[in-house]
Amino acid sequence: MTEKVLAAVRVAPGKMEFQEFPMPELSDDSALLKMDVAGICGTDVKFYMHPPTTKPVIMGHENIGYIARAGREFTRRKGFKEGDLVFLEHYVMCGKCEWCHKGEYRLCEATDWRSNPEGIRYGYTPVDRPPTALWGGFAQYAYLPWNSVLHHVPKGVTPEMAGLVTPMANGVEWSLFDGGVGYNSRVLIQGPGQQGLSQTVICKQAGASLIIVTGTSKDAARLEVAKKLGADYVIDVNKEDPLARIREITGGEGVDVVLDCTAGAGTVPVLLGVEAMKRKGGLMVVQGEMPEFPNYPIGKIAVKYITMKSARGHSFRSCELALQQIASKRFPLELVTTHRFGLKDVDLAIRSVGNLEGGLKGVIHASLIPWE
Ligand SMILES: [Zn+2]
Ligand SMILES: [Zn+2]
Image 1 (tube, helix red, strand yellow):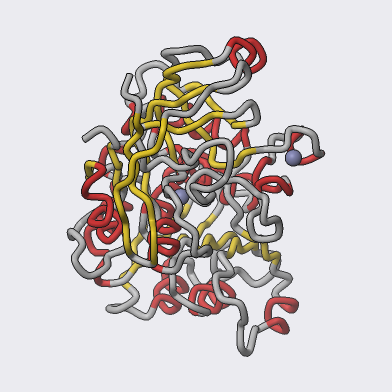
Image 2 (cartoon, rainbow, N blue to C red):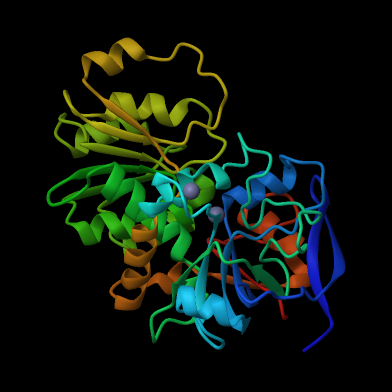
């Protein structure tokens, strides 16, 4: 094993630097993950270009790897041993609070970097946080303390396919658990990126009778993939009036559930969702990216008796269900895992996922392979 660990470190907005860090000393209750695949999503794009901290950070929060070394206590308490292929949640839990006991690590105060400066998440936590710098997946190894949260990757699932577990788990969480999508649901999914496509798969699996996916003209290839994964209709909002089209498709009735999987679209997805919703009692899961919402249509939301919920990551259970969904091989998910990048191409990978200047075209989900 090498003495040093190579990592891509975000040192400034839109700037990566390659640095070496010492291999961490392991206590009896900690372990070391040899990274295999770090998935890249829209959050990486956002935080690469607009970092929430000025400190250097090893990004990478959707991490798959093999346990390279494990202390005896780590294995005894957690049941993971050297050689296991695992998915590492990005939340580093307290393990004591009500949320942690429910498997809702995303809601634990110890993982909430927005309100708690001590909060730890893989891909978000600066390199100066003790006991090691290795708090992100864009590196050869990641450090696993006793309170890291792991899942076994089922047999027959490759690390690259397992890299889809985060968007798929969000699909389970937002559409099924939050949105209540099930048999005969009519669903509008806005945005055909890896997140919207994952929601499409989960809604189809759950028995939705109508799945409409919207995107822009730039998303033409993604909209085609949406159809192959189960969308009944796709709408290019640059070519058609989405509301008129949704009314036509639903015979004027509207949809039951709206899932916002857009990025940087401002108030538009919420406004369209409110209009496209059925007459009474629909449900929306929203991103809420912007700090303010001018002319928020609260009157219309109240009159239509709409429930609004917030898209907030995934629970332990949704990760397990997502892994089982991937293992079932029921859907052609290889249409989503379009690209692989080596560590040295991390900047290109993020720009490609974000459709930014200098990026490759046609990328849906990118796997970063830290050893390539
Ligand atoms: Zn992500
Ligand atoms: Zn907790």
